[in-house]
Image (cartoon, rainbow over all chains, first blue to last red; front, side):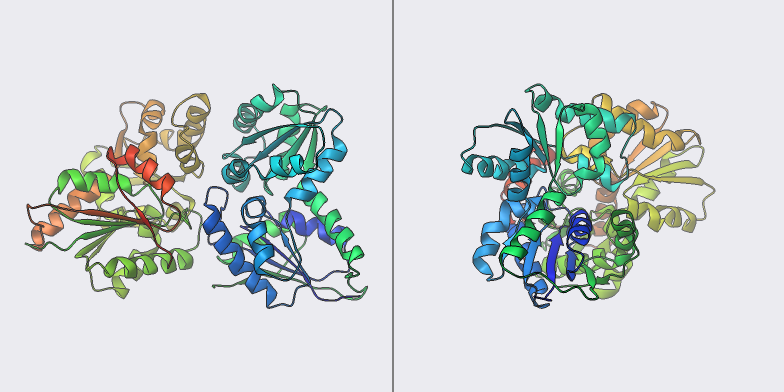
Length: 263
Length: 263
């Protein structure tokens, strides 16, 4: 039994989708979350910058004696996971590998689509991960840079949103994918619109569920599971807490407290 | 005669619209530009955070012995101009006042619309500036949070862009404005789409032209104009230089060099 907390971070609020799944699947774990809301988004920033930010955050989370770090941000997972693993001795989990494993289990035809931010897609992290499994598959990728602003402004449905989703998914759907990885923490909030455009035959992979399952598996394997007593969840952000607390209520369906931290 | 450079900063590339106008109107001035591309955008961040970032940047620009600072970013002008003026002895110019003066000169009916980022609009900086002039006018404001991602992804025209512009401008047009302040450095790049939806009767105010005129006026008044010799323009960014250099070519129609700076 190991009561040390799990550290989870994201460029902003999106990683709360992962927190939500960890709450459900691992209710006996303590959590420390950091959202880099002063420097959000990461999706169009360079590898060097995202890695610098990620290292600062892992250093901060380490001060809580975390037993494990989950990089909930797909961009940071794509660009910086290797560097984090090299720089820190704590186990670090990204969202790419769990998402890929789930997609390979789900897909029947092996025709897998991946959508994500500009930098996630240009890094080809998903494509490389799928290739590394040696499984017979066809991967087609597409960055959807307007999806994050749509979610952040709560344009989750309606004519304009559907048009933007259709325009972005068209090249993937034309290649007959049967599985679509939602490669950004924001995208699950557009699930309904995406499913509507993609059709019921295309299965959507929400990395947040996959990463929570993967974390459970890892904790079991390493004998690091938490206790069954009272747990805590601490939330930190780099910008003001007001908007974060409001959105956290939507993501987690509970009231939380949060604190601003400036590095 | 004063050959010290003018310092200009923005959250990212948008401030290059101001650099372009300063190049044209003040060809004998040296320029040092900083774009905070690692932390862009500012438009949805808190006053405290934007002020902290702005102070760091002004401190950096001060190391070049600038004679004047132009805050090219409307959000930073709205939230942080007062704090910068208080903290530094160099003259600091924002984009709000010049934009307002131009709008008041242009408007015949006094019915003025203002569009900008979430934080610019919620600060009511434009409204307060117009009120402070004591001029008889009616101001209506609207934040357009999707305009910046549209510009950054080069969706400058087309069906979806026009629909988004129409949806955002509708409440302003319903109030019969005759003048519209483009209260964000990115918006001039959407000028064609905005003019198309607003109609030819609505005059668009591009703050970048107004602030360059204002700067010229101030330099003349304080006897701070530069020499007629060879000038330089230095560009610094906080993220990688590649994308910035590419966009600078679009904004300035010339090739520039840039350097990355980490505070």
